[in-house]
Image (cartoon, rainbow, N blue to C red; front, side, top):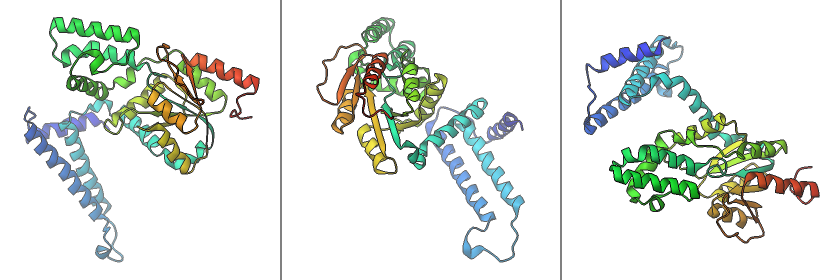
Length: 338
């Protein structure tokens, strides 16, 4: 089947009815028309199977050809919606399999029993992924265009980003020196443009995760990335993990990570968290307050130590591995499985 040929045929027909332009109201009218049309065709497909009990007639044979015809009508509406949305049809197969994997992970709750036993809880940004370097690179490349900066503004903007990246300072509107609305616009383009797939990976990330896997601990990644507002980030994150060949077993999203762990524990799983590692002090405090042994990853050592019996400050994942290995060899790590 030549999908592109079908798409081009439908697009040629569509141009007899509607020509793309910059008028948003006309775009929305067309979108509503197509979406409701597909909804109507879905109802007609159901009707071919006499799904309503009072419409069912004993002995009546199903009209399979009619059902298939309605499916074709739905497909033609889908092609028209893809045309309207400027869908990259040449990427359909790749996007299909990527989305299939996302659906698999969205239904992990059904396999929660697999979480029984020892596990480690690991953050992604600034623990595995070098988020600061990644977003600075994006902002330097696209910021001047997106924000419509003058040449002199661009020089100052790029200089600030280079300085922040060098100092490993969190990048935001205040530190970059721009209005919050402009920074939000830049972050939006970063999130929708697939740039989470291009984040650099720290050189200790794969070593650390492979070390965890060697100890037969389940690796539970919990991130606060805003997947609720940007569902594509789920796909982008999985694609990044695959491309970098980073070992993991579960991927969760939460604004309160400790609460998310409690939800899992209160469901089917009986978690034995060996430790959690995060760079964000907010989440470090959340884990520590629940009695979870926590490593605060402070890669530059610029922060004072957070004093808690459950928290240990580490400056790299290499150091964390050495620290835990020494405990295991000394027999002090009582949470290590025998």
